[in-house]
Length: 316
Image (cartoon, rainbow, N blue to C red; front, side):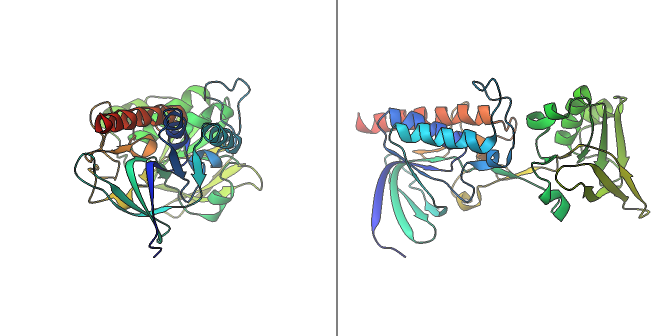
């Protein structure tokens, strides 16, 4: 391990909309932020081909371009962006304490404030055809990408509340939604089940799983398999939405920060404050309700403001 310890005033872990927005605000407040990008520089948006719902882009923008622009904006105010991943943390528990972070298993840092913006990763089925067509009709966010399939036939995989909500959303804009539920019943609440069952253009297939996503460059169809009978069936669709959950990228913080049962970091009230003074969490690492780029950016702003106020109390 590198024994040279660098001290940073404001360390931001993660480089999605939350991390870069936090960096923009922190840099403008002279907090000298350093961003470590993590394994996926730019976060989940780098796998999104079109972003049509972020304010300020009337013609839309592709996800990677948007993240490059956010990085450039953060750097314009003095943010230092580094490639690297936090692999170990040791947070001080008292106000004014110095937090210790290890990058890539070797580089040691200390920081007055840490802003966690590590995001979350959508769970996928893991079959090759699904992975190959991500960005070509396979999506993990109906609210983000459903608009592009207006008037078309699509399918959604999942049986929980999120899947039911997204199926209802898609049914409003798509001509038909085929819903694949792995078990003989949904996990969603009874109210959500009744809602989905009452929508005429949602076709619910129980005990059904994806066998293959069809298409070369874009999604053209779906081969389904009944896991009780083994019977297979092909349908023509243009979009496949995976709604089987997300996993927050927060494993290295376990045992030091309060989390829910899934791993989302718990923050105090409407703030981004964690249970550790000087450590703040924003974006999808702590938001399991909305999970949108614009809300992540908003909480990134909040985290920088919370960190600025925290530093002011120490200096005062």
